[in-house]
Length: 108
Image 1 (cartoon, rainbow, N blue to C red):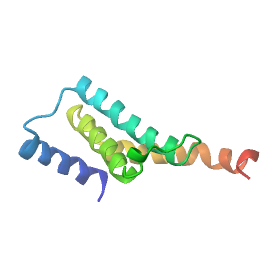
Image 2 (cartoon, one colour; image 1 turned 60 degrees about the vertical axis):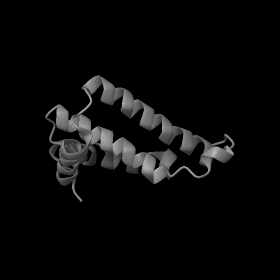
Image 3 (tube, rainbow, N blue to C red; image 1 turned 120 degrees about the vertical axis):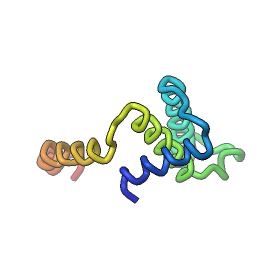
Image 4 (cartoon, rainbow, N blue to C red; image 1 turned 45 degrees about the vertical axis):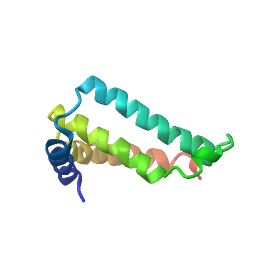
């Protein structure tokens, strides 16, 4: 699945099941909430905090997918072609960071 198709899938789902998009501010708050859920799992499962019994059955993949869904909603409602933006970002990062990361002593 590419990003362009994912954006279309989300748009179709919103029209068929979600009635309409939440406004951009609501979606931004929703995104923050979803990222917080990802952070909680990572901090407790991979970090130094102990994992609560109620958190042990949380699915990190599902929470990451929630983040992607809301990002796709925001892209759709603000007219962003996220595939084009992502491709441009990857090209920029490749040009800018290739030598920088290879020369970073901390990464060796």
